[in-house]
Length: 148
Image (cartoon, one colour):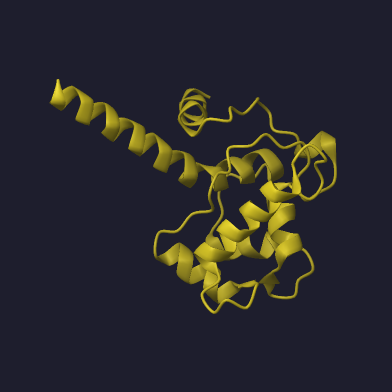
């Protein structure tokens, strides 16, 4: 029984990790129809004002939380804080290209907040709506991602 329990926990842990790693791929495919990219091009694509950093607006735009009235402000703030805490090494409130590249080099991946969003950073419902409904649960989302 212990072995079975350990095996189940290992699978769930792997699925949760897969979900986080897959969020960037899902975003690039669903939002941009891009299936091959590198860390530099991902950063540049999401640096909306081309100033060399991701600020709070760009982080929120990346996740679509600044355009969706259904997402409470505290959720937007939580996502922004989580991303900044993980990547912003010098704590200046923005993410530079160098910080992003170092984060990716060390195996970092943008977290999947597990929320359903309606608009991404293009401000266009037609192109930014996900192609399939997303579950609030990371494990269910992981299973959906694997099956699709």
